[in-house]
Image 1 (cartoon, rainbow, N blue to C red):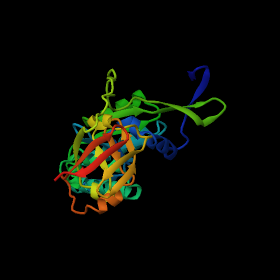
Image 2: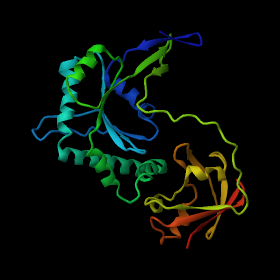
Image 3: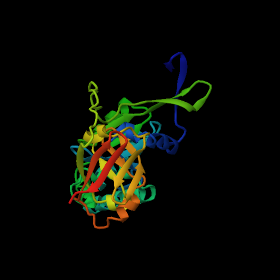
Image 4: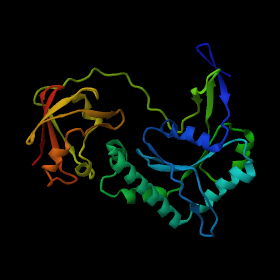
Length: 311
């Protein structure tokens, strides 16, 4: 039992693996970190000998050392040797196949582009494109997939038997995440709490420094990534976010096509990006290409800015 402020929570046992997988998928950012992208497309891993199995998903981890995970969501009630160990051993065999590696990279790339196209998700594009200095997303994904992945088992109850079973696989990178769910007594799953150990190290909290206020005439430049001209957004690096107000405040951009009212989407690790109202400006500047620079100049701090191309 889990007791929170006098309220009792009971350990929840997932009735099916599918239901447990849905719960886990809702929290992949918390498991793998904010610089991760989770792909739940079930691309088959198949060895050259034809032995194959399908994992539950893949986690792509960006940052200083990009890497990836093959993810298997399991229930402890499944037989260890006949089910869990058998599944994971097939992944180990299958991932050595270069053709399989290429197919996984292609599946990731397809899912990434489809999702970004449908949602116009500038943040998703920044997470992938910011670490890449050239417009080579597929090559970037292929290079990561060619490296040895971490095999990650997410299970609702870790056991000594599971640890002993997977130790027989002799694979150097296997991680087990015990993902427990507690439901409020008398209510059930609608009110719940999760308990698990994340697979990333939290960034140490540093003492907040006094915010540097922008001054009239202060300016800086940003470089356009490849997708800006297609999805009409501008990325503002986190180092320059102090020059702008928060995400709930509108600002005005003075441009050569008139005054534009816009606002920010913000993420602490990646900075911010402007998107609202910029489509007409981009359409009027079809000559722009990746690598070109845009300059912001403060006209009225936190309210109005000049926005122009750098010649």
